[in-house]
Image 1 (cartoon, helix red, strand yellow):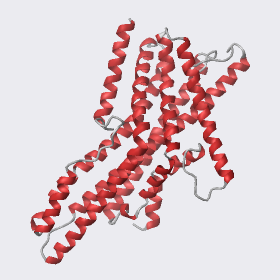
Image 2 (cartoon, one colour; image 1 turned 90 degrees about the horizontal axis):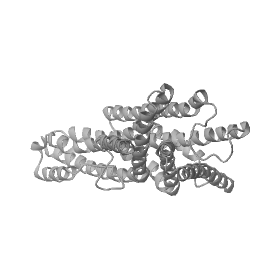
Image 3 (cartoon, helix red, strand yellow; image 1 turned 135 degrees about the vertical axis):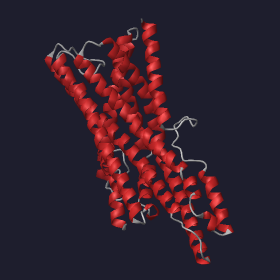
Image 4 (cartoon, helix red, strand yellow; image 1 turned 180 degrees about the horizontal axis):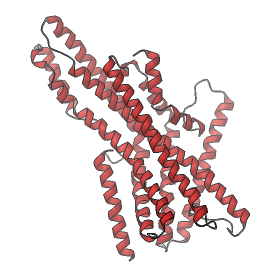
Length: 388
């Protein structure tokens, strides 16, 4: 694969997400940006930060005003927790924008360029998988947001779609339409932020998985050593594989820096959202339109953490296969030095790559996803029993 094709495919993992981050003023500007561009970049960030901050304040006021009413609190946490995770994503991307820009530069390194036709197919397949997941998750999230905003109009046109503090009387039509417009303009950008961050997280993890698969192919194709020249070739390729794996580890650390804090907060907030959604479904079981809206939002929230946990789980799984792949090579024909290097590499591969949460004893994985769902339902059952 040539340099131009590698750059094009690598950009397909993240280009639309980064473009949206640039619109919001979150991403690192080019070094040649003018002062006017820098000012507009900062103003866009402050505007979006203000929108999310006002939403959180309105949610908090409504919770404090109805602190003794569990049903109202559950209705608020329906979106309050989601907006809290958006705020963390907003701050994290902005504060670490330089490190994230370096992450993209690292992805374009020639070290990660496929060498053979088989590696090229693997790399292109990973890019297509990331694109498909981004499109599917984006469609589901937009559908959930649209149902939240539009369904309320047909069910009860006297109420707003989001349960939060109302600074004026909704009986006044002007007040109602102004607040409805505010809900529309505040929810959709945060919905797009979730889509951009979560889809980019799974795309970066898919990029890592593809690199590990390509490394497995190289280890598997080392071949036998029938002559001293073969031993020399294998020694050279083993050293190259060691350097390649070290660069993959470095890239994993950079991806970990992008995901760790916002992703960990997202896991916690998802528990709050799932509990509130379970509670809302149990109290409005006879309202078809409401159940449809809640179920769609519930599925979008589950998909939000599943795509990241599943992609991270694949990274761990593929890295755990490297030692087996190397052992299945024709190492018995190699000379003593190459066998020693093989043993050292297998010892290193024995510790697979993990994508850790803030809690270093826990990682993003399918067991973590399952525990979140189980934990959410357990909290809901306990809450329902205490409340009854």
